[in-house]
Amino acid sequence: MAEIDHTLFEARRDRLMAELGAAAAVIPAAALTTHHADCEWPFRQDSDFFYLTGFDEPDAVALLLPHRPEGERFVLFVQPKDPAAEVWTGFRWGTEGAVEHYGAEIAHPLDQLSEKLPQYLAGAEAIAFRIGRHPAVEPLVLSAWGRQLDQFARTGTAALGLVAPTPILHRLRLRKEPHELDRLREACRISAEAHELARSITQPGMRESEVQAAIEAHFRARGARGPAYGSIVAGGDNACVLHYTANTAPLQDGDLLLIDAGCSLEDYYNGDITRTFPVNGRFTAEQRDLYSLVLEAQESAVDMVQPGGTAEEVHATALRVLVEGLVELGLLVGEVDGLIERGDYRHLYMHRTGHWLGLDVHDVGAYRLGEQPATLEPGMVLTVEPGLYISERLKVPEGQPEIDDRWKGIGIRIEDDVAVTAEGHDVLTASALKAVDAMERC
View 1 (cartoon, rainbow, N blue to C red):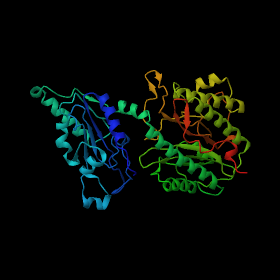
View 2 (view 1 turned 90 degrees about the vertical axis):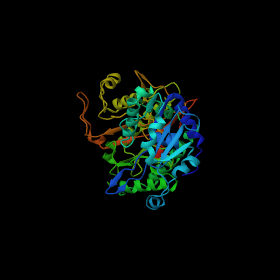
View 3 (view 1 turned 45 degrees about the vertical axis):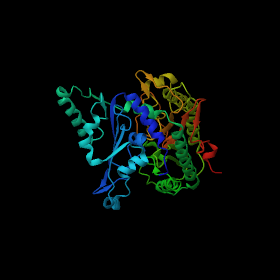
View 4 (view 1 turned 30 degrees about the vertical axis):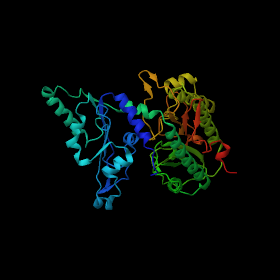
């Protein structure tokens, strides 16, 4: 991984500790996960841990201790240097590297966590720890707190309770820093290149897996870690399965190909793009009508991304355009407001129009604050991805027309990654073309 400016992580830790007050935070790293027998999946760091430390090794634990003196507020427990282990599993930074390269004020070997954790938590007014996610660390946190409670009669001090750090931390992560926006732009640039490549090579008779291989090879060739999620390469009716990832079918002349794929960078920032185009380079009349409708809905929704707006408004805008268009095409009947209120469109459009994007593809952050939708602010990044899926999988609502065969098997989604700016928005994935004419080959 390229050298990281660790003042970024220090500033994040400072912001979190300022909001924690005198609560001590225990933030574990991810653990290795077994794939089969004694082989593990490729390691993927916990996003909260990475956001605060930049440290990319498994099983570490970070302590943020605002109640401690300066020089003792950022403590890392890490796997120690071990040449014999590193022969098998690769380089470790160890305790010295944790201090010298990652800004830890104090670092200890991981096997000392159970011994030293109670000492570091002593004097904190509360303990900030995410219950239910870290089975190896949770018993140690509860034991340390229990010891404080047992000794309260003699010491007169104990943490008042466990608090969740994630509501504060995820609110901080929701608003991207300039550095994060730069990394997201890079992820989106590489992802967009891969989509353009895929469209240029697709021909009838290829298999979905061949297109997937080309996309993911491009990610790696451009320096990305790999795909940010299971790539969806779905020809024809497969596109009507929202999370289709088998990617094994042959591509048929006359079908559309829906590709939902994005890369993840070495520091975990992600792209997430969906494009849909004809396998043979030419839309049928029905495909063109539906594609044009989804594109209109998507572009109208993107225009709603601006400071002071909401993700709810983005979705509502796309939904209204889609329902109005479906009525015009005869796939729905009735008054638009009533169709929306009753949900009579959901056999054709069954998902929301987007999600937050960042270190996680479905990134953290609240969409609602109580009864009110969260307000869009500069630095937030979200996807905008309406679609239509015409199949027999879902029952047609009572009073709505049965679907004519000429529409069946058409699945279309168009997705861009959009950053909220002070002036409005910035489409980070604009270099992936989506105009109707651009999707066709002459």
